[in-house]
Image 1 (tube, rainbow, N blue to C red):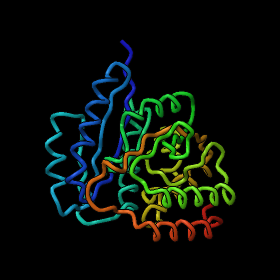
Image 2: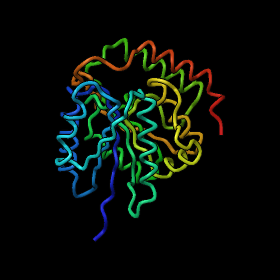
Image 3: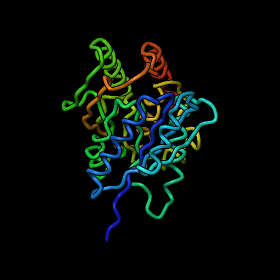
Image 4: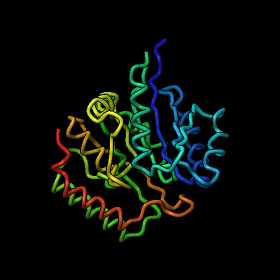
Amino acid sequence: MPIKPTILFALPCFNEEKNIAPLLDNFIKLSIHYHHLFDIQVVVIDDASTDNTYSIASEYLNKLNLIIIKHEYNKNLTGGINTAFNYFSTRLDETNPPMAFGLMDGDNSHNPLNIPAMFEKILLGYDIVVASRYHKDSQICGVVWWRQLLSFGLAIIFKLLRNIPGIWDYSCGFRLYSPSIVKKLSKKYKAVFVQEKSFASMVEILLKGHLEGALCTESPMFLRYDLKLGESKMPFIKTIIGNLKLLKSLNSVKK
């Protein structure tokens, strides 16, 4: 009997006690609906939360194929991404390693039911699949129009200054990565995959993957920012400034 492929997803979280349960519930739904096609494994990366994120996630250890990695101190999103990719790297040499490695925000704004369409593109040979806000079939709920406009303007700037074929959404954190690109990034960058602070780190890892020859594409997503509870972890203006600074230093990201 053929072995089902495994998709491994990491969820960097900081103070997501209001959001982690409904998000993990959606992963359970995904596992039930697609159990005949693939297995899903989830890694919650608790970034030294000061609320009940860890204890709530722990309640799902017997409901889902789940592990929890807890930071001893807060490392921010940059540390969460590095922890995720370092864990991914440890899984590459297994007898039957995961066929895709994913990242997703831990605030329940991303829907795991978008994963099957993304995984299909990994099976077609793509190395990085971005759940894009700008795909023609995407739907965005709960984001004010001016933030959408500014985000799209920033995407156009990235496209003009560092074009990655197949990509418009450079900063969305909802992605799948192939084992091949994880291995290449691990070999080149060792334990420090990203250094940029805040959400600019998502642009950094995408650029580094592109420079390592990753074949990139996008998949539609249903962004439900209206389902997110609690305060945003993303200071919008600071994030834009960080991305613009990253643009200025693109030449420092070389092979």
